[in-house]
Length: 294
Image 1 (tube, rainbow, N blue to C red):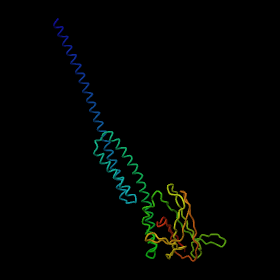
Image 2: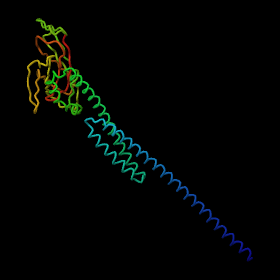
Image 3: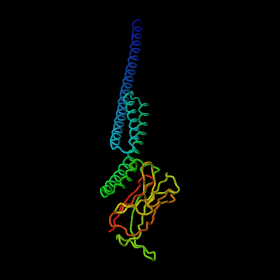
Image 4: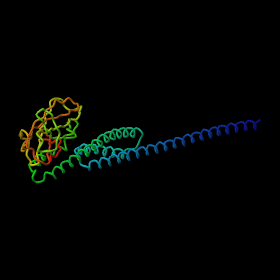
């Protein structure tokens, strides 16, 4: 009888120990799984942090490249690059937790969007500046020392490359100069002969610009012959220590749409050679071209 009771107690103890063992194994398994999950999360977070750092460093490199080109929006580029540098330092110091990474990624996307806009504007500036430099160099070569007066006028427009790209600035395009023989009947015959011409027709286009101010827009048109003479009315305007002598005023009612402007300049005894047409907005040269009479 006593042996039977002892066996029952032993079995009960063994059962309790078995249950405790099973519970311990389950707890150890859960703890191991949690550790693996935490390690996986930390690995993923670290990868996200490294990705954000790499993206920000690439963004900074693009800004450095654009700033080195030294365009008129360099100050804007520098300011945005400093934001990138600040965020990059902040990300590197962070622990890389999920909530912080989400915030940093949103900030990166905003900076990337701004960068794309500025880089695109910078490309437009480079192209426009290159055209202006090419045009100016060509004009300087043709004029030489004999056209010193006209070069002084062009020098007043050094600020052109810093303002022509502004959003609200009107662009003057397709400037042309053509000579005509006007008969007594009023019929106009195109000619490139100086001896036949008795009228020059100057034309240009004001480009569409939705953000520009509408209303009457006036330009000063300067036509210079091959002997450096300003043709037409020879009006004079003074801007600070500079003087502009030009051929005639050209006014148009601008309503934010593309406008073609044509104006005639009568004359006689035109000289042979290259003629230059410069269009000024007050003291700024906004367009120029040349044509030749034989």
